Amino acid sequence: MKPQLLTIVVPCYNEEDVLPETVRRLSQVLSGLMKEQLISAESRMLFVDDGSRDRTWELIEQFHQTNPYVTGLKLAKNAGHQNALLAGLTAAKTVSDCVISIDADLQDDVDVMREFVIQFLAGYDVVYGVRQSRSADTWLKRTTAQGFYRLMHAMGVNIRYNHADYRLMSKRALEALGRFQEVNLFLRGIVPLIGFPSTEVYYNRHERFAGESKYPLKKMLAFAFEGITSFSVTPIRFVTLTGFAIFALSLLAFVYAIAGKLWGTTVSGWTSLILSIWFIGGVQLLALGLIGEYIGKVYKEVKRRPLYVVEKEMLLTPASTAYRQAAAAVQPAKRQV
Image (tube, rainbow, N blue to C red; front, side, top):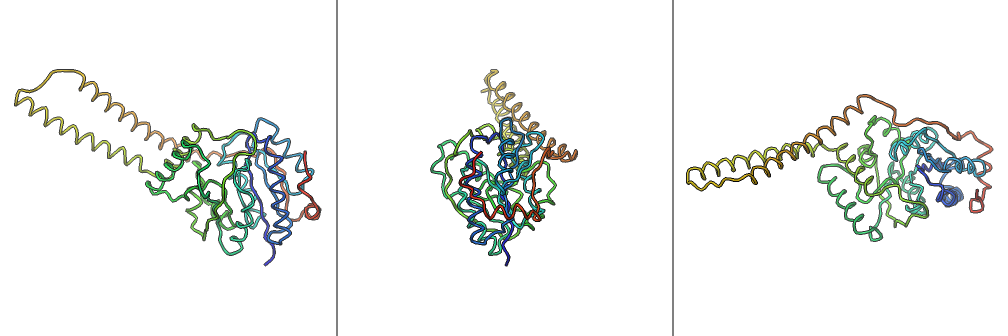
């Protein structure tokens, strides 16, 4: 079998501090895989600038001129991590045999990409990168993350435990992914729906090399809520069950009130009444908000607006002979901006 063309897709948002090191390490990985003839010499990296406000795109352009592995895609505005990732996957699938997606912060172990490729060559269409443990996380982050995975599984959503967006996908898996025309995008839940042969590769997650995390607690909670409401109607059913429960409690309260009236033990007061009104009012507002969330998702789907707009692109085709020859001779470790 001839070496397969691999593209590494890297979504970026304000990553100027870490980008030079990311390019260096990923270039070393590509160079090593090429020497082993596991991938084609036409393989490359595709950096997707998700509307960064720093020098991220400027650095990508500079590396494109000096490093034959580097290509780039600039979105017109910040479209969000999932949409930026999808933009890169869509651009890469036309010329690639397989694609690996990874964040730019170097927390995911780039050395296990070799195992990704080996599993792909063994016949797997999707290879998930899975963290071995979360011992390095803070207690809050570890607890909330584990709670999220358990909650998703309890609601019937098939996602890989301790897997983010570090994965390899074959060309036919990417083509199948392209048939999911969802506006409310949650790739961690969509990819398992494809159903092609898949496997897992375990690795240890590192600290961020430089820069700041783009996923504070607020964004993490919003992302989790997006995933839950995009793949499960269980919250709506929970509202229905809550309604039945309150109705049952009201019947019990009615029986208790009648019994108290007959036995002459009723006690006048407004506290229980006010608390009941507040409780029922809160449940009603919660139910309306949850229903509104689902209606809003339907609204977005119906409008069919584009998920992202590409402003600039620097892509290579397999016919780029000059770049292919330069790639064989490049020494990534010495390349710097």
